[in-house]
Amino acid sequence: MKKLLSILLLSILLYGSDAAFEAFHTGNYKKAFSLLDTEAKQGNINATYNLSLMYYNGYGVEQNISKAAELLERAAKAGHKKALQNVGRIYMQTMNFDKAAEWLKKNAKEGDTKACYLLSEIYVTQNKFKEAKKWAQRAIDSGNSEVLLLYKEYKLQNY
Image (cartoon, rainbow, N blue to C red; front, side, top):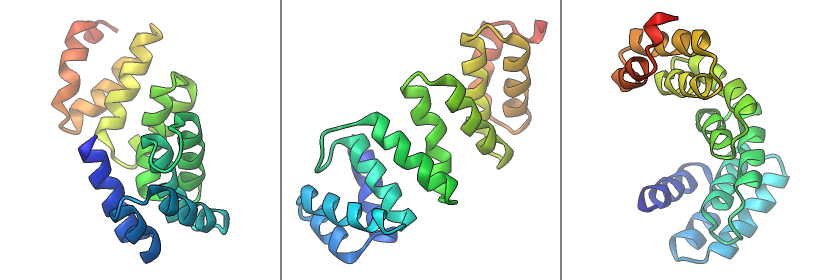
């Protein structure tokens, strides 16, 4: 949780307005939320991304993972790199595996080996072992050793 707070604070510092950063930094989350909401409605993708983090963490607003996912997707579609990295992961949390796979494949094409690993996890849970092996192998080939346990546990080499 502390790590997410640090990420949000840094993100607002780098991508948000000074007023939103100041409000967040002083613990006035409702004001920060309001400022970011206004900027997001005006098309500011950085504000949209930061707003998604506020929904995800429940800062200044009731926690709403579905709304966070919606805003992350909007920011990702507009080209926000961090949103693209996170949208597939948040859809995994909401158990929307088809949406998660759609976004994680985009990440994997950008060279994100963690996305390859997560795709292999999704396909294992769906008993799609050939597809799981494909993504696990991509992760391994790119140096992600985290996937080796999954590869061995489900005997993906047999598919």
